Image (cartoon, rainbow, N blue to C red; front, side, top):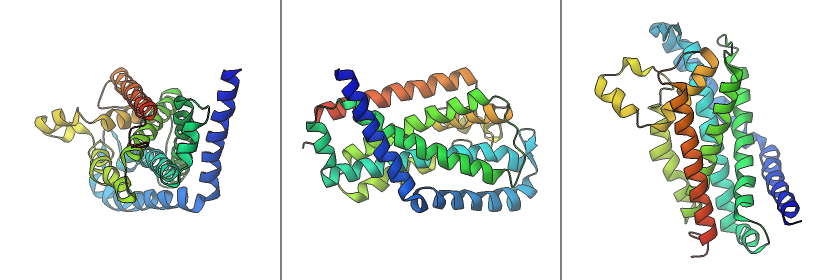
Length: 257
């Protein structure tokens, strides 16, 4: 009976998050798609002509999986950090915590919203990419699974950011100073084979590199890293981030203080 109640609670939280995304789709879906379109025009169409091929593919084609993954990362993270912080700031989260609702249900409900927004934007960006280049998915299962796992990681990351945030300015710190640089240096626009040995080794510590290359392998069949290693790294971050969120919520850290 308790499990059934928790599933009803999970459905309610997840439905609230999805409805929120769809209700304000002009804010949640359209702006990131316009941004990615500009990337395709400027970096792919204009600069890409001068670059030529990369990794054995036309530069636009090589860059497309990176931009799709970039949109999934930023939107899954942004959706949860904004929604969860708003719930905390407005007092909705405290109501959920005192209700007979398990912490994992609150986490999974918000993560579902992050996944939906990330994949929705990623799907629209993929359609946009088809106007600029040809995409033939080589390994659909790998591509989809990497996208979902990545959306989970950054949805959980957004929740951690929201838990510790004390004001709205704190919500923008991680995306601006951590997430942005890691994404741009994660192989979205280039192959690490072009880097000097030192910087290629440094890039190996960037988790986004494994996500981008894992997805690129699913789309194009090429990758700078081993696909099994990519799965291990991403799954490790899923477990670590989920465990962190569960611990913080159960202890009330950043919420009851």
